[in-house]
Each structure stands twice: as structure tokens, then as C-alpha cells.
Length: 577
Image (cartoon, rainbow, N blue to C red; front, top):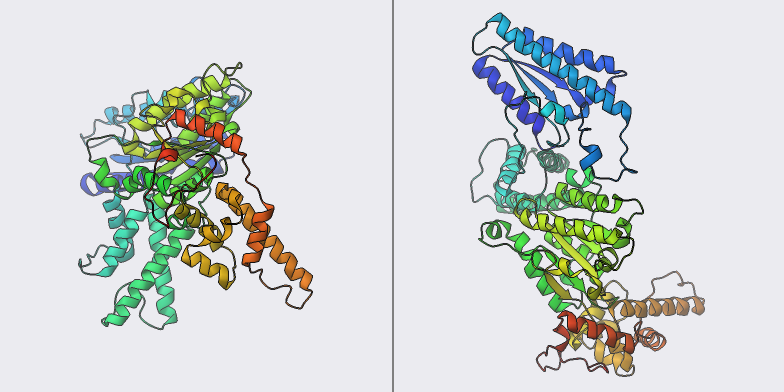
């Protein structure tokens, strides 16, 4: 939907109308299905359209959204996306589809007989153009009847085509000179709208033009996007255009998200503001962000880039937190799956849910599939006596290989997170699948500890003393000198410390019993120190040692790497080293 199928069909018929004097007969099958009260009325409308095409021949008959009245019901039982329990076909739908297909074949034969019987010129006859969502959504019986001579897939627009489309819809078909700053703004918009369909681009362009008209109307100037002669007015217009584009893209949900039910990524923090995780962030930037930013360069390179990443590490260190921000930074549509939610008690239903997940990602490409708690979904085969997870693993192996082969067409990235990588089936971790393994663990240096704690403080109101410590990078020295166990805190533990400090601050305000009790709670150093005193690490040293032994055997050497011995970036001294 919204890819331009109907527009392309009508443009082709208009071309034939101008060159071969062909008449055009149009039938909206989706509207016909929605408004018809009986199958008899559908058959009458189809017959009327075919007879009109024969009467006006040479003519072009356009059956738009034909799969709305003759969907593919033949393969649903054997190759469908669900188990027998989930995908029982309505017998009335099957019967209706069979009757309409028979009627269409009968009318097509009538058109052929009329053409031969009238002995018209070689340009006579009826040309049939049908549109549908995809080739698998239309009745197989009608496809294999021999009526169609060719199958044309409407491709997605690349960056240059999106830029040209936006330019034409905003300025007509006039060409702007290359020195105009507005052309660069539109080029950036064309890069930022990867995955947008023509209807999306037209809507965005219309909204930009409307905002400009409203602004020019308020300023009592002549409406229309463009630059005034003065340099100051030119810079102001360019700035307003960039602000309009940013606000529209932020609020607009493209069709690929609406049709496959993808929630908008509402991350308030940007990628650079994420504290700590220095090495993991750099690796993710090299694996996903950089290839997406320079996609045209990587696509033309004679190599296959990794599309599967496994994040592993102790709980509470940001594996699940970092993925939505990664998707937002990479401009990828995020599809999240919490491992156990795919498992089903009915035979075949679990594998069907996995297939549906990848189908949604393909429709929303460029996209990222995130499997949280991956060890619960894909444990080693043979560990489950029911055989459900074994079949899920087999299905994942097939789809991960498929995602790798077609990555240049769809750009689907797979990210999985787990705290127990040793429990995942080894076949899923081999090259071509989840081949990149990144450790996401506790802060490894004073710099990383300060960065993490400072990022958590950013969203809080703090007094001047704490603000100075945050700016000077002295948080670790100030808060950990009296509490040695604080260096063993995970990101979740640090957040718990600040939540406790916030409650202490609120209690102090309420105990003061003054008229300013409704004011903001401003954290002081005393509140944070008291919160550190009351909070303990969520993971015991013994549990950390067990996990570190697992990660060492799995291949993690981040915990053994050394860093330069600087005062601001020295290694944390823990009892586990």
C-alpha cells in the first residue's frame, strides 16, 4: 500500500491512450468488496467492466487491488503462517473466491472470443492490468490460468529517487541551482526517509509546503517555499525549513510502520548521551550505524557485512536499554521480541510466530529485530523434551540464513541479548548468523564509571556542589572513597541509588513543613551519599565470578584487557580481578 501501483497502472493506461487511442476502464476491487452487499453484485460489476472494455476496444481494463476479492486461499492450509488451530479458513471465503475466479476466467474468455470474432485490427482487444499487494496474496488458480504474460514488481525508491520525488512535489518540475541551501536540505531529507513509500513522501512534502504557507501568511508575505533576496532572509528561510522537516519527520509514522504494527521509537536520550559502555558502543557503531549511514558505499563493496549481533553480559548493565537507541541512531524500524512470547503450546504455532516476525521486518525494512532473553527462545537442541524450542531453533537457522542472503535488498539486522550465552544453541552463533558477540558489562574504568553515573544524573535536578563534581569528573572519587562496594554497581544499581536519593530529598522537603513543599526535589551530595550507604550491589561476588568464568570460556576478553594508566582512566580495582 502506498508504493505507487495504482498510479503506475493508470499512467501506463494513459500512455496507451495517447499513443494507441485506447480507452481506460477502471475498477476499484477494494471499494467493491467493501460496499457490495452480496456476491451477486460483485459479479455484476465485474461483468459490467469487462463488457464495457469489449465495447470500447482497443481498451485497457485496470483491476485495482484484485487480491481484495480473490485472495490466495489455495496455499493457506499447507504453506500458511500459522498452525492448524490458528489458521482455519472460512469456508464461505473459499467458496466466494472460487466463484469470482470462475467468473473472471469466463469474462476473460469472452474478451478473447469477441476480439477474434470481430476480426479487428492488431491494435484492437482488451489489455488487462491488475494490481495486488504482492504476488503471493492473489489467488494462485487465477495466476496460473495463463492470463498474465508478465509480472512487474514495483521497486522501492533509492535516495536519489526520493530526493527527486520530494523536490518535484514541493517545487514542481523546476530545477534549483546547486548553490541553493534548500536543495541540500531536501537531499538530507531524502537520506533520512529510507523505507518511506511514495505516498509517505507526498504527505511529508505536502505538510512542509503547508507549514511554509502558514508562516508566510502570518508574516503577511507572499507564500511559497523559496529564498528572499537578502542574505538574512535567506538564512532565516533555510533555518525554518530545517525546523519544519525535523518536526514533521519526528511526528510522522510511515506506512511500513502502520501496516505491520510497529510502535514508534520514543527514546528521549540520544546515542552520544548514553553513559559508559564505551567499547560496546564503538563496536555497534562500526557494525550497524556506519554501514547504514554510508549504505550505498557498503552495498557496492564485494563483501558481505555481518547482520547478526549477540549482546551478552551480567544483568542490569544496559543490554536491553541500548538497543532502542541503536535503532534510532541507525534510522531502523525496531521490532522487539521478548523470547518466551513466541512460544506456543500448539504444534506449528511457535514456528509460525517466528516467520511472522521476519515477515513484519521485511515489510518494514530497513528494520532491526531485537530478541530479548534469547536463551529462553533458542536453547541448545535436545534440552527441551517437548521439542518446541528445537523446531524454533531450526526455523531461526533458516530465516537467519535468508536474512543474510537478502540483506542488500531488505537491510534487516538481528540483535539478540542474553546473560547466559552458553545456553544458546551453538549453530546460531556461527558466521553468517549471530556472528558478532559483544560483551556489555560493568564499568571497567574510572572514566566509564563517571560517564555512566553522570548520564544518570543528567535527568535529575542537582545542587551546585553535585553539578561541579559532574562537570569535573570527580564523581567516582567523591562517592566511592567511603563505600568501596560502589565500584561494583551495575547501571541498574546506580539508578536505584539515585531513586533512593530522590525519595530522601522528597522526605526532607515534606518534613520541613514549609510553604515551598510543592517545589522541585533538588538532589544534594548528602542525599546521594546516604543512598549509597543504603544500597548494595544486586549481584553477589560469587555470582559475578560464575558469570565471568562463563564469559571467559565463551570468548570474552574485554574484562582482561588493560587500559592506559591515566589518573582519569585507571582500571577499577575490584575483588574479582
